[in-house]
Image 1 (cartoon, rainbow, N blue to C red):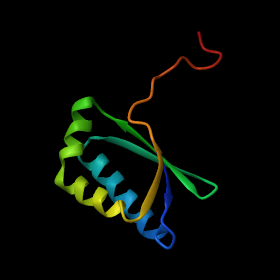
Image 2: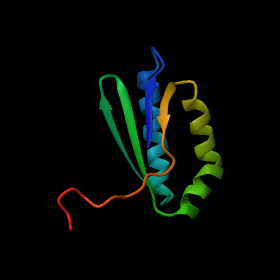
Image 3: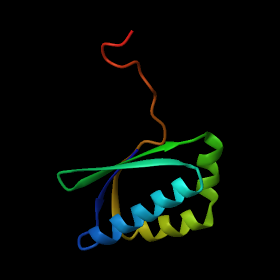
Length: 92
């Protein structure tokens, strides 16, 4: 999960790059992305298909080019590499 803010004047470019990254993630079967927005900040949730898929994406030249471009378009607020799944509220 990544929480980020667009650099002023770069919001459209950042969204475009995020969509390009999400397309690569889906096309190469690395996982799937969900993008949310709240009060000017964005939250990107990425569900990796496996640890191997995550590692492959981190070495993928196409992904690396997008991440390099994104580095000029956004300011990272917080990144969580892994989250622990908990039982749902009210679940058994």
